[in-house]
Length: 210
Image (cartoon, rainbow, N blue to C red):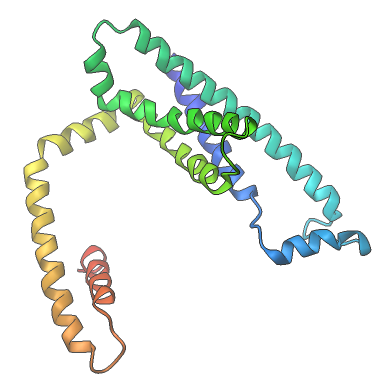
């Protein structure tokens, strides 16, 4: 079962990322090009007519959406079966691994709800919101933590070293504030140097060559 789940997680993540690559940016130039495409045939880098290329891309998107829906349906059924069969509900709901599983399916459930509300004319078009919710589906990669022991060991190590990591964060924050302030006052008279740029420069210096 674990092998099947990991395989579905990897396949669904790959199809999700591939679907992002296939998305076309919507801008007035492309809309105008679509409206005038029938006046003269055009070709893309693959040598195919634009209509054939768009048709092939549409078919590929459809296949990716089907794979994505199958994977998310599997994740949803898996989560609710474990939810209904657990003898202790509160520990189940507060477990970090189960919260990761919930984050993996929550965007899918919200998208279904939004589509139903749009179909019933309860809300208007929410394209940008649906797009944001779709991007949040990348959280499904956190489901790997349940099935990979090395990731669980890493999380346990971070939990046990929280005081040391907190102290490190405080020291890093002090260093960033101190050096960014010094840099700001040293550079502001010679160039249009803002304080936010000073903070960014200090962070990049500490986390790369510092």
